[in-house]
Image (cartoon, rainbow, N blue to C red):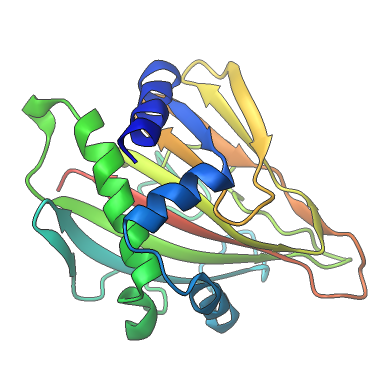
Length: 240
């Protein structure tokens, strides 16, 4: 686990981001106590519609929760809104967005706990000692982006962006009958640094939010007659 974490951490420290292959993430999560991935993945079938889409889109479903993450463990915070300023999200920012909460069963699921433990083990050592908090404000988002013949699904409708946090993990949970969904990474001057497509469950993008922009191209159905969607887990950590 230590070698894999160091390799990912070195890439983030050097480039500002890292693409993590499924097998590497599987190894990290197994050490952190991953169990019942199938049950965890199935919880994406029970997400509420995102009613805060300023573009009028009806293609995004989600649940949200906040946690306190530290060396002492994981503590769920009372349900609260998700907020981003318009500086970071010109489309949907500037207001408190109350999403349906992540269910109790999902919030305490060993798969999610393994992800949060791994995020702490990766991101906390990357943070300079002078700015490292004792407790990280951590937000978890379950996203389903749906694609239809008459409406592409937009994982990042705000375009290339930063989230206004310190660290970001985007992990693929499931892809069903969709094409594209390519992640692009740019530096702060807008120059491309890399691109990749999350295709296998557990494949992840790890991002230093202060140093790079990220965005994902729209997904479209391969077979318009069948359900088409892209499920991801997003974890952000920031200093309180």
